[in-house]
Image (cartoon, rainbow, N blue to C red):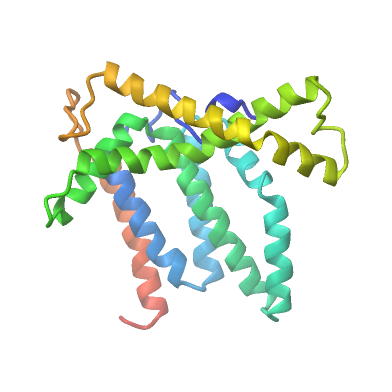
Length: 251
């Protein structure tokens, strides 16, 4: 079973994906969304999904971490399949839609597992800076965005901790029927929220200890250079976009 400590959060190992420039990662995420949202080509989506799996393997993060995230959404996939079937979509189109969802989830997981919160804040600040026409406080904005991103993984891991604790007191989530599971989750949700917000407060306090200020750009003592692998990753994403442009007949 996946370690709750790293569910959807930074996994500190050394890999070529971890060493990528955080700004480049966010740019690649944006470029990735263009063909994945617009294209209906099964061939393109299979190639993109294979490419993401290769990046996941290169990240040195245990593959079960990624696949467990999809497994946790298995019931949602079933609901989506029934919804697509009711719309009369072909099997190929249904597969394309499921690949879109899976690829997006795994790409986000790849970024979260391989980018520390500090580097993610830095990447968001730098990515938004060209659009800062209204002189916004990008330090505070990026801090809120990262906090929102971290909230859901923390909520899920905290929920598991609370449910295990509640099971020891008789509110058994793991051995009951569906109604018992729902009752256990609803009954413990208040404590789950309270503990999740406490963990977020601890993270903010840790940022203050590192002398991170939300009133200005983060001071980064490490140089974030764009290296060869960053450029190659950008080129691959541009190739996906080029294929999509040819698909829609623009060139």
